[in-house]
Length: 406
Image (cartoon, rainbow, N blue to C red; front, side):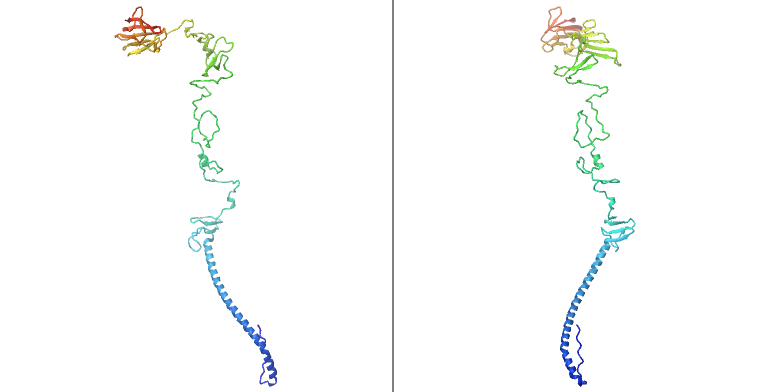
């Protein structure tokens, strides 16, 4: 604030102007005092403000110093974290200290940002062009993925290891029945089905056991016009019957031909009387009549041409299988069983030969044994090397005859 200047003060040296100048000078003093006081107040205010500014400046200076220290620390921390551009991967930070995990540097040689993992420098990021998109990715190289547990049935990606683990380790089954199956395992390319021995091959099958053709077929199986196979509708066991064709002059007919399927080699037929006839080519050689009699082509009845031998070296009781045979015995004797226990048919004939020098007994249990041409009954004795013939003539009666019978 400016102060108005005082007028020329009065001087005793200038008596002429002393009063005028004294009046003017005194008149100006009140204004001078007011302005001086105002100036003093302003000066005091400025002094106070200056003091406050000085305090603020001191505080700002302190803050600035703290900020500078913090900035220096931040820069040092940043400098330890980002090491700048390097032509080669650094082994220490810019201060010569150990590298911080997560430290970065720009590798000018590889032209890529690298990060320290704690053990190695690796690329800090991969170009977006090296990533596969979520939708329809096109992988290259040998991509890998977690392998799901065997039999997993979800939308999880299947690795080659999972696919191989799904290969079946169970041998295939052959049961002849078609089925979709429920297993999630697949068969290997080299899997082998076991041979199904329960089924005949298409080429040259070799059947065994009971062989059937259909079950009550509506149409018989014709065999070259010679006959037909047809299940007997009246047979509860489902038997296959060889039936006579309508118009045939003979009954059921089985024929054998040579390998060229021409030229009759043999046959079996059953005529309308029920006789079974056998023969080579077209000539009858043997016939079994409906009554069970065996005849040759001249209708002569046939029997044994030999008497088979049943050798015994101990006591022996006759059996049905001994019919038409001769028993050669050396010791123990022969016993004829009762009809109630072994029912030999009437006419059964058995020859007994004593193949020793010691007499053998021929006894019967509860039925009658009669010596031919005598009234003798009961146990008979057959001398050494004697020969006796036994013939059953009634249900409970046998006749014995021969050389050496006593």
